[in-house]
Structures are given as C-alpha cells and as structure tokens.
Image (tube, rainbow, N blue to C red; front, side, top):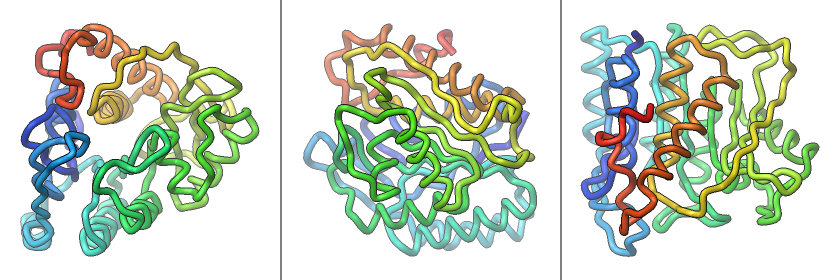
Length: 281
C-alpha cells in the first residue's frame, strides 16, 4: 500500500483527470490524495469551457503540507496552467524525489497530431520542464512529438525512429518513458524505454534491454479520459511491485476492456463511468 498524490485538474462535467484516476488507484489498494491545478467546467472539446486556476491555493497548500510532514511514496502530475504552477510543482516534485518519492509525469497536451483546445505553446514548454523531473513519463505519440519538437507523422514510424523518439524524451531528463498511441511499421502499439540504471520506485526487467514494444488492435472509438485510466492502472501496478513492461500491458488491457464495454455510450466527451466498471480492473 503506497501513498500517492495526484496533481491534476478537476473537471466538473466528465469522468476524466482526477475523477478517473482516484477510484482506480483506490481500488488497487493505494491511499490517494490530490492537489488540483485548476477547476475546469467540462472537457475542452465541447468547444466552450470555463477554467479557474488554483495557483494561489497550491502556493498556500505546499508549505502547510511541508510543515505537517506529509509524505508520499509517489506523485503523478498532469495538466499545468501557468509558468508559476509548473515551477511550484517541479520544485516540489524535486524535493520529494530527493526524499525517495517516485515521480510520474503525464504531459497532457493533445492527441491526433494537434493540441487540445485551449492548450498553448507555452504549456508545451511547461510540460518539457515537468518531464525533466520524472522517473517515468507517459505521453501519447502526439505529446511525444510536441515535447521533442519532432514532426508528427500520421502514418507512423519505423522501429529505429521510435527508439530515437524515446531517446529524445529521456534527453529532456526523464529516467524512463512510455509512449502510447504510437504506430510503428504499420502496427498500433505502445513503446517504452527503460532506464539505464535501476530505479528505487519500480522494477524494470533491465536484462531484456532498453526498449520494448507492445502491439494492440485499435478499437475505433475515442473516449476522453482513457489516457488518465491508462496512467492510473500503470501507476497502481508499478507501485504494487510489478515490472514496467508488465504494468504497461495490464494498463493497455484494462483500457481496451473498458472501451469495449462502454462503446455504445453516446457522449464520448464525458469519458467512461469508471466507478461502474471496477470489476474490469
């Protein structure tokens, strides 16, 4: 049982972000805490939305937690809304890491070759800063391209190019990286690069080499929040002592089962009602 802190936005109308991750990590046996980066009315692809940053709240909360001696075994960061937020969170994660906390960074920015509505180039730079303090980061292919200033190619990559993309992410400072929604040599897959050194937070199967690839058959249904679900399942299993590749495979399988069960839901922007599907975890 590991104490996990989520630093992400809270969306009022949709099962995404914190709302998707909290029940999964709790179900997997971990006490979960949260530090919201913003209150968001609804997912951004509805076209109209309202956002209230919580930077002042964060600035006041972190010293209180430090004074009280609160400790976390892992922290996972999501969407950042300002340079000050990114600086606060990066410094906080850096201090936690020095005390042995595992840092996960989900650089939420876009999909399908474009940034999400409301996401700016400044936020891309903020995410590069966050990735620099990560033990593990897990962008999708679009986000990996933006992070590394690599042209997005809808047709995908060959294996050498996929490994180079992972290398560029690690060069930003991340110790390990997993890229979802990739397409390599015509096949949908998740690709990963292990650290060259053992990590204290989770095992990595170093004897199997630096890179790995897990293929999957794509389901032609696009739900919001599946990246958050993937992240939560991945983190939950890693913190339960499973290896990086095995945890990645489990997260992929769970997302596939959840999409398949809920594919008939009419409003995909609302995400998957995860509390009704915990039996699939």
